[in-house]
Every structure is written in C-alpha cells, then in structure tokens.
Image (cartoon, rainbow, N blue to C red; front, side):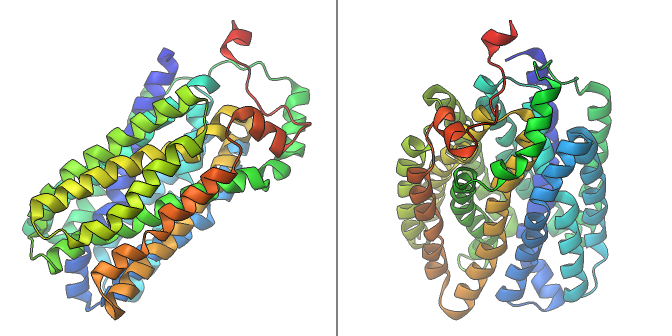
Length: 412
C-alpha cells in the first residue's frame, strides 16, 4: 500500500479504537447502571438500542455531509461531539436522562463512520481498499478489548460514572494526531463532467437494490455482533457468577480473534475480487450453529473456546458487506454509499440488544442467544443474491454512471 494509505489506516485505526471504547464500555457497566438506577433487562437493552437508533438515523445524512463538506471536517466534528457526550454520561441521574444522553451520543457519533470510509477511499486505490479498510476496522475488536480492560480496572475501583468521565478525554489525542499527520488525498483523474454526473446520479446509486443488498448483509452481521456483544458481560455476570474483571479477561481471546477475522476476510475479499457469497455463506452458517452451542457450554474454558471460534468466523464476514462497493464506486460516492451500508448494520444495533433483553426477561438467556441466529441466516441470503464483482455491481447500479475509480495502471 502507498505510504499515504498506511498513515491514513493508522490514524483512522486510532479514531475507531476510541469510537468503540466510548460506545461499548457501557456493555460492561450495565449491571452497575441497572443496579444504581433500578433497571430491568428490557430497560438496559433499551439503553443500547436507543444509541443505535440515533446512530442509524444519521448514517446517510452523515455520508452526504462528508461528500459535500469533506470527510475530515465532518469526522473531526463528530469525534469532538461524541467525546463530550461520553463525559456527560457520568452525570446521568435517572433512566430518562441517560436515555436522552445515549440518543444524542448516537447522533453525533453516527456522522463518523461514513466520513472515515470516505477519508480512506480518497487515500487508497480501489484494488487495495478492502484490505486497507479491513485493517482499519480490525480496530473494532481492539476497541472492544480496550473497553473490557478499562471496565475491568475502573468499574470495581472508581465506579461507572468516573469511568465515563475519564475515557471522554481520549478523543482529544486523536484530534491532535489527525491535525499533525493526516496526509492529503491521492490525486484522482476525475473531470468536472464526472463530478457533475456523480452528483446527478447519486440518488440512483444510493437506492439501488444492489447497494441495499449489501446493507442487508451488514444488517445480518450486526444482529449477531450487537446482540451478543451487548449482553455477554451481563450473561456471564448473572448466569455464570463471574466478576466483571474476569468477564473482561474472558473477552480477550474472542475480541482478538474477531480482529484477526476482519483482516483475513478483507485480504481474502481482495484476492477474490469481492465475491461475498464465497466468504459469507460458510462463515455465517458456522456462526449460526455456534449460537445454539455457546450458551450451553458450562465449562468456562469451553465457553471461551467456542466464543473465540465464533468471533473469528463472524469477523471474516465483516468486510464482505463493503468489498464490492468499495471496488466499484468512485470516492465521490463513497460517503453516502457507505452510509447506506452502515445504516443497515446500525438498524440491527437498534433491534437486537432490545430483542435480546426482552427474550431474556420472558424466556431465557439461551433462547435469546438462539434468536440472534436470524442475523447470520439473513446475511447468507443477501450475500447469495447481491452482485458478486465490481463489474456486476456497476451494471446493476447505474449503467451510464462512471462509478469506478481509475485503476493503478491508468494512474501511472
């Protein structure tokens, strides 16, 4: 990868780590928050879901803003604002107030993902975008792991309120790093006529069945991720009697496996030229089966082993939701197009934690885990139906739009 791409990957990696610390640390704090504020499982699930509701609402508008005003400007504004609301979480004195803060937190953090994808697209070539984005998004697992470690240390010592106050300052370091080291975009062979066409046909691209199919893949993937990730700490604490510190330690192998899976899946996607069916079908089928096995694993080492294998397989499917659009679309479309795909995933984040909590309250944790298997199965169906290559995608999306970036050969 060019030096510009490598530096961009590192800087976006850091931002995504902070993003995931700030948004997922609440998963580990839910038992304490529930105890302090007198919340049942459904209300705790709603705290997770309301964030994703707001996060989903702004995905496409955030992408459009990034396309119009610049990826870095929009991303920086989002980073500053979400750090503020992370800190404000510490002062919530009731369920209603915390619910409002989580909603606003989701709104301001929601403008970041599409801006980040666009920033990387502007600083990479199409043939390497999936791999570059995969390395960037492996930060998700690192952020979840860091959140687990931070929660394991701070929750027993200073409590959840001070914990949120402390982690709110992490975004400042990222902003300073961006201002100092973020490189300029790679030169593009894009004419004024191309830009006019891309603006006129953006709506056709965003609402095409082909792009919506990739959003459906990501929806199914995130049903699994956000349903299981949000509730695993509470499940292990309540059902298995584990301390939050031990829960944090148990998260290490599965989160590392998820990060490795994202990178492996991204590299495989680039080698295959996209072809999500070849990756999503086997990995998500395995994951769906493991959701029936995982809650029944009584020996804790076996639970960790099954969870780690499931995380590795699921992680490999992550970039399949982006692989073909990343190769097929011009960077001028990338903010809004990635916003559509990410919207699918965040819609799952609205539904799955809440459904998991409701099923747990009315049936059992085991049934709640099994319910999440709907997500992987949906991903399998969507991956089997979407265009499998950039050429097929361009033919489906807009035959008269020059959606592809210039190749490396045409730039040299």
